[in-house]
Image (cartoon, rainbow over all chains, first blue to last red; front, side, top):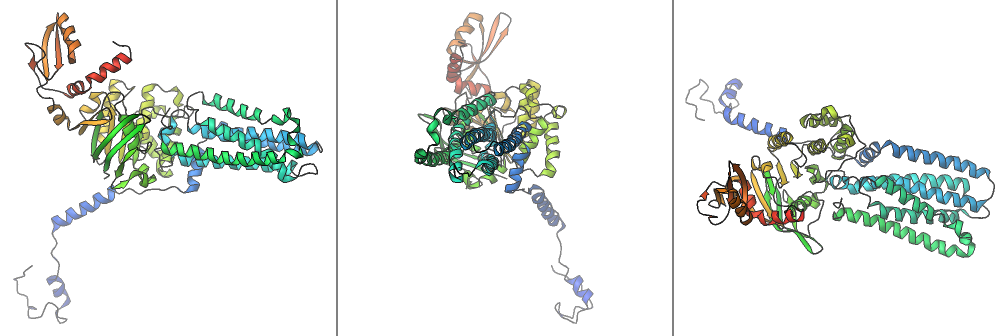
Length: 268
Length: 299
């Protein structure tokens, strides 16, 4: 901007170090367009208010959300099962060396415990919730994974308890004991997971319970087939354990794939 | 402000094509998808929400494919499904708090937000009641409340007013209108009045394709000269009703005033009148409506 006003310091160059500081400041004061300044500030204010601070929950926060909002009945059932498992463990240590009897009891108990733990996944697919859950930040796939993790930890705790009480004896070595327990557990969990995706209506609780019962009853097959635990049948048990593991993984992949595709999620 | 782009989106279920080559660009405003049952509205909305994967074509949000955005896209999204899901053993407050947590609303704001949305839909007095005790209208209002929990920038509402009484319907329209600023609101319905007064753009869907798109004024303009009014005797009114698409029928003494949608003059004495959105709907969907009526045993 041109300044026509003559100052007594005008003989000095504007950059001159001899120019008195105050005079230099007043001469070099940058002209401010108040209107533009106000517009600029308003635009900045608009941007700031429009900006949303996003909160990205950590993995542990997501786990906590799923744990916190589980119905009380679920925790009562799991707590009750753990307590029963402990009581059973104490009883098993007292009944002496009836190893095959112990094994059968543990196998059936684990099947029921596993199915009850998995029932929380069925809840996600019930009452038309799956479609809505799939659009949330913590989506259906993540919810299923978290609940499977929770169920898996519960099953490990029960299996650990039984292994410490009954596993490993003169009659059955620890590794074999684990395989005998795992086979019915894996197969019934696979069957249960397969059925769980179809429970989408109000009768889900009843159907889920019925499916659990069926799987549990199937796990009692050594009662009918007395030679089931015979040494000569061990290769069959190994094969069944491997096949059960593969099928279980395939079933999990199938459920996650179905969620991703979405078609079956919407078939409420 | 988000921008959604659909590029030749197609969805096929076995032998049935539900949505076919839909290309759209959606910016700030209210978009009303109108169409008869089975037109493909719900399938399109499900694809927009990332629930269904398109068989062909892509959906972009601000230039990035929505499946690549993943959680970031869902962060912006508020969805009300046609079959709204809820846990009946939860109270309204617990249910909304759960969804707020799943929508990544920070814990310190969640409580306040839940109260705010409950107030907005008039359910604050029922927050401690189990959802299983709610009426259909209350459940619908709860559904609208959950949509707003995360201040979504993209709101997708599938048949949002079904089950609401007229007062609630007006209230809902006002809520949608008020929150449409700076957001994309996508609304699907077959109730014309739901979108007539609040939609910035109307999209008519038929057999999986968008057949008409534009403002209410421009869409109605497209059938200018095709809406007729005629006062007839009762017997003639029945005859005309069978032949033509009649968008309104009103008894006036012993005569009947008909509003007929037709390309040509339906009868001598019929006078042209200004079209409305319901007339547009009748013009495009009469055939389908008849089919639906047959299916439901009304004819």
